[in-house]
Image (cartoon, rainbow, N blue to C red; front, side, top):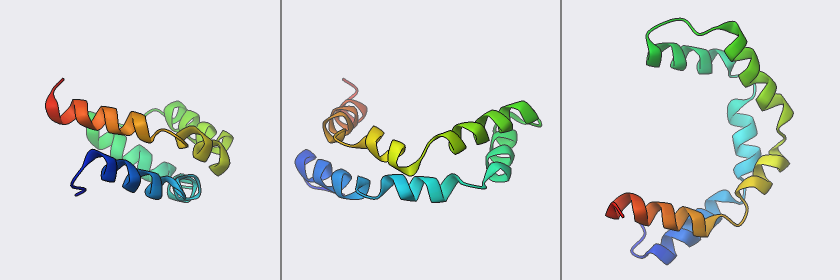
Length: 88
Protein backbone atom coordinates (compact mmCIF):
# COMPACT_ATOMS: atom_id res chain seq x y z
CA UNK A 1 0.00 0.00 0.00
CA UNK A 2 1.22 3.49 -0.83
CA UNK A 3 2.33 5.62 2.10
CA UNK A 4 0.74 8.81 0.80
CA UNK A 5 -2.25 9.69 -1.32
CA UNK A 6 0.11 11.11 -3.95
CA UNK A 7 1.96 7.79 -4.14
CA UNK A 8 -1.39 6.04 -4.50
CA UNK A 9 -2.33 8.36 -7.36
CA UNK A 10 0.96 7.64 -9.10
CA UNK A 11 0.43 3.90 -8.68
CA UNK A 12 -3.08 4.19 -10.09
CA UNK A 13 -1.74 6.12 -13.10
CA UNK A 14 0.88 3.43 -13.79
CA UNK A 15 -1.72 0.70 -13.47
CA UNK A 16 -4.06 2.46 -15.88
CA UNK A 17 -1.51 2.76 -18.69
CA UNK A 18 -2.67 -0.61 -20.04
CA UNK A 19 -6.18 -0.63 -18.62
CA UNK A 20 -7.93 -0.69 -22.01
CA UNK A 21 -6.21 -3.73 -23.49
CA UNK A 22 -6.30 -5.54 -20.15
CA UNK A 23 -10.03 -4.81 -19.71
CA UNK A 24 -10.88 -5.95 -23.23
CA UNK A 25 -8.90 -9.19 -22.85
CA UNK A 26 -10.52 -9.82 -19.48
CA UNK A 27 -14.13 -9.47 -20.65
CA UNK A 28 -14.11 -10.68 -24.25
CA UNK A 29 -15.80 -14.06 -24.55
CA UNK A 30 -16.61 -14.17 -20.84
CA UNK A 31 -20.42 -14.15 -21.07
CA UNK A 32 -20.58 -17.45 -19.21
CA UNK A 33 -18.53 -16.10 -16.30
CA UNK A 34 -20.67 -12.94 -16.20
CA UNK A 35 -23.92 -14.91 -16.24
CA UNK A 36 -22.74 -17.44 -13.65
CA UNK A 37 -21.49 -14.76 -11.24
CA UNK A 38 -24.65 -12.71 -11.58
CA UNK A 39 -26.84 -15.80 -11.11
CA UNK A 40 -24.96 -16.68 -7.93
CA UNK A 41 -25.42 -13.12 -6.66
CA UNK A 42 -29.17 -13.02 -7.16
CA UNK A 43 -29.84 -16.71 -6.54
CA UNK A 44 -31.70 -17.20 -9.81
CA UNK A 45 -30.92 -17.68 -13.50
CA UNK A 46 -30.10 -14.52 -15.43
CA UNK A 47 -32.19 -13.57 -18.43
CA UNK A 48 -30.58 -14.18 -21.80
CA UNK A 49 -31.50 -10.62 -22.72
CA UNK A 50 -29.33 -9.31 -19.87
CA UNK A 51 -26.37 -11.39 -21.01
CA UNK A 52 -26.90 -10.31 -24.63
CA UNK A 53 -26.99 -6.65 -23.60
CA UNK A 54 -23.76 -7.11 -21.64
CA UNK A 55 -22.09 -8.77 -24.64
CA UNK A 56 -23.28 -5.99 -26.96
CA UNK A 57 -21.85 -3.39 -24.62
CA UNK A 58 -18.51 -5.18 -24.45
CA UNK A 59 -18.42 -5.60 -28.24
CA UNK A 60 -19.29 -1.93 -28.79
CA UNK A 61 -16.50 -0.70 -26.50
CA UNK A 62 -12.97 -0.88 -27.81
CA UNK A 63 -9.86 -1.10 -25.68
CA UNK A 64 -9.08 2.44 -26.84
CA UNK A 65 -12.53 3.68 -25.75
CA UNK A 66 -12.02 2.18 -22.30
CA UNK A 67 -8.49 3.59 -22.09
CA UNK A 68 -9.76 7.09 -22.90
CA UNK A 69 -12.50 6.79 -20.28
CA UNK A 70 -10.00 6.19 -17.44
CA UNK A 71 -7.25 8.50 -18.65
CA UNK A 72 -6.60 11.44 -16.35
CA UNK A 73 -8.93 10.21 -13.62
CA UNK A 74 -6.22 9.83 -10.98
CA UNK A 75 -7.59 12.83 -9.10
CA UNK A 76 -11.05 11.28 -9.03
CA UNK A 77 -9.56 8.02 -7.80
CA UNK A 78 -7.70 9.82 -5.01
CA UNK A 79 -10.77 11.77 -3.90
CA UNK A 80 -12.98 8.67 -3.87
CA UNK A 81 -10.34 6.75 -1.94
CA UNK A 82 -10.02 9.54 0.61
CA UNK A 83 -13.79 9.74 1.04
CA UNK A 84 -14.09 5.98 1.34
CA UNK A 85 -11.56 5.63 4.13
CA UNK A 86 -12.51 8.75 6.04
CA UNK A 87 -16.27 8.48 5.68
CA UNK A 88 -16.37 12.12 4.57
